[in-house]
Image (cartoon, rainbow, N blue to C red; front, side, top):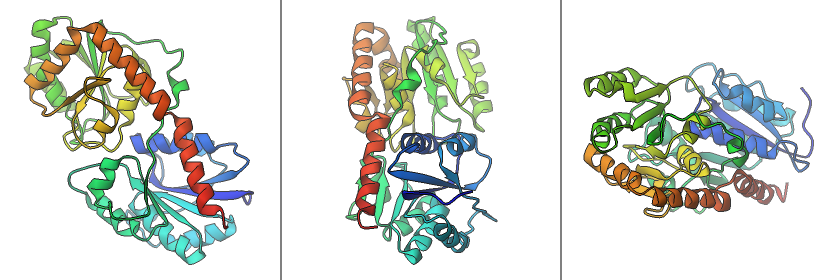
Length: 363
């Protein structure tokens, strides 16, 4: 390994699982990769995540940080040595352990610290969120990906808080071969955990099929609730019409083959990558009216927002779009335009590089 040149940014993350935050970290790394202005060092605490290899490919340097146990806050000591060895000028952290270690190391070495851990808008913060919130008040800048997330974390009063929206690399959606399953195919992408409500969507399917018998539902994701969702589909007699895809990190072709993209999130979202992906593909969106979803979905313009997950409410929203395909197509076009104008990866990367420039102007 060599010492970096130019202004050196260290991005430090708790891990690289197959989640929305990790996709955005990859987009940021990819966008800054090859820059003459910045070099990027990457530190990953929990090794072996599905997006780790991709992230490492875009980093100029991978720093060998070792985490000995789950909440290993002693990492701050070894991180100080890495900052000095590789001449790091700024630390940007994602995740509660990274937030703490990066903050302590940054303050003791006199370099700016960016806390990037507001990536959700849950009504109740979990343990890791609460740890991250503690460190936020001492960071030079706190970056959230939605205004809903800022409110959920209760840091509205911090002058250091800034919102930078997620961005989509629109090239990902070029030259796709849609993997279609019929003209009235619905799609929901999201892991099968308590954070998503695939079960409510399955319960609505018999109601939808009573009017649109050919309707099929594509569910993409991993998680412990796959088994219970399969069982529910069988109990409701729609198992042949619910297709499960549980082993892919690249669902774009599946999404392209649907006519409506859905995201049911009982606890809300920060700024959903999945919703942005539906929009980038020109699909009308039906999503829960919670968290950051209203920052993406303008009801009646590029999609519909649900006030509840009652099967009747979901079915009514789906039926309204299937009954007026021209309106659905117009919503899809409006969503695509919104991504191009406000949520591209180029815009996100430029916002981050402007932030880095401002913090490093005196370094």
